[in-house]
Length: 636
Image 1 (cartoon, rainbow, N blue to C red):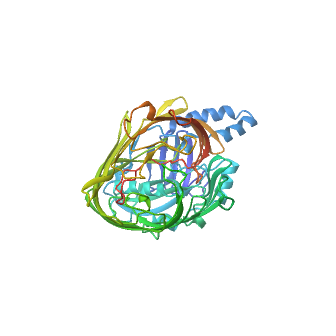
Image 2 (cartoon, rainbow, N blue to C red):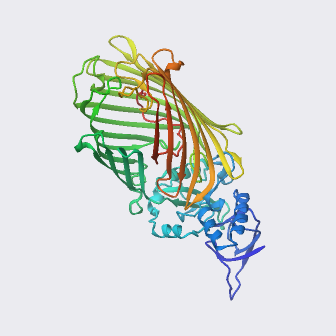
Image 3 (cartoon, helix red, strand yellow):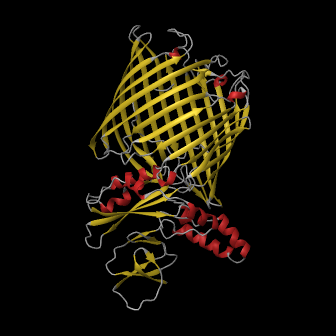
């Protein structure tokens, strides 16, 4: 048993004192965590901790106890020689610091239920090191030289910025859902790797709980690479946290060897403000000039990210100059310039604790400045149009937490719930006016020992007022599943399964479904259709490998596509692909995942088989949310 003396809740140290103050003795067993006012301590064995009398604390079971024992055993064996000691520190981390939680998906609010009805007291912010730190044990410090160096030079997100993203307030009653929502919002911040909110009873009044918001930043300087071959690639360089203000600046470079000399090189500049002055209004500004397009855009928006948010809305302004190649005539290039403006506003009414009625209105205007000849039946893509939307939806939504879904160690948030929404729009174009009707439904939940399932369905169609017929409609269903986490020794495994079916309804010319651009007949002609079925299986193996803060997963992805105008499930309409890949992840970096993949594309007769090797780090590490967004026409 160890003996630890403390002078206060913030520092744990052994020392001599001339005059012994009044003290309390706390026994913390191996495998448990001691929660003090702003420090969380996980002892390595049974420990007797002496703290100041009257200090409040909580003791909870550590979820990392068993995996840490394995780590410590391995560390002991590796410490016998200098070489194995260095190799160990390079290749391994303790499981508690990398948070390999073997618990199933848990409700996000359950951690705070014991404090429901109490009152928030003092609210403090505590930071932990970006590398080798932990929001679950704030005494963790960096041991490796590279982690110490990065922690030293990193500029933390400023306290004011974090405070602007905290919406709990001193004096209010504890609401478990509100705390869980606030934790989730902090984790969605690009500059924050992970966040955890702790509550501890006040020493003066047990009905008051002090709040400690523990945050861990990411390394804010990074790069994106999308590389297929040396003749066609793009690179992004960015700073996600300028001077600690969470401002996001991105510079992009594009290269295409097959373009004209003056168009081979392209560039882009993007600037993002995640939250203007605590209003939760997000701003994105972009200028891009490359062989594909010249784009200038500004986007301001505020979503309904919690049930308590009453008002949402947004404004989008953009100017685009580009070339348009119809999918059925890819060698016919049409130059065009287009201005687009849209504004929307919404009101949310909280009917129950997690149930909201959301009403929205939107106006969208598309105006082509330069375009080719158009008619009612030709080049309809270039039609000027004004569209007016109204929508109403009912949503019930909660969140659960887990790990090892898309990432390796950070807490990941999963939507549970259901929604239904209806949209009406009136469109005025150059040839005639038409009504638009749409219905959307969705459901998502996690089932113990079965896995997570989500289902969404949308049906939208225009009503041609002049000809009194349905046209330009789409029917889309999607189903997504991931399995519980399975374990074998030090490895973890998860299975993903996606199905999506899309059907066009009396689509007008130049509206097609297609498959990946790798499927063509050698003359840039791609397969087209008005209905498509996509089935995808992905198996992911999370390994225990560790190298300089990086962790690794292996995956295999198989996709099966059917695309046609007539009989869908026919061999001649079947397009398949098989991928194997390696993902290298360091979630403390702002570009967490580098994806190395090799894909083989198997085509039916008339199209060419192909393969692709790709390096990228645009992997989507977040699971799709279940939400009611701004009203819009289903994209086909």
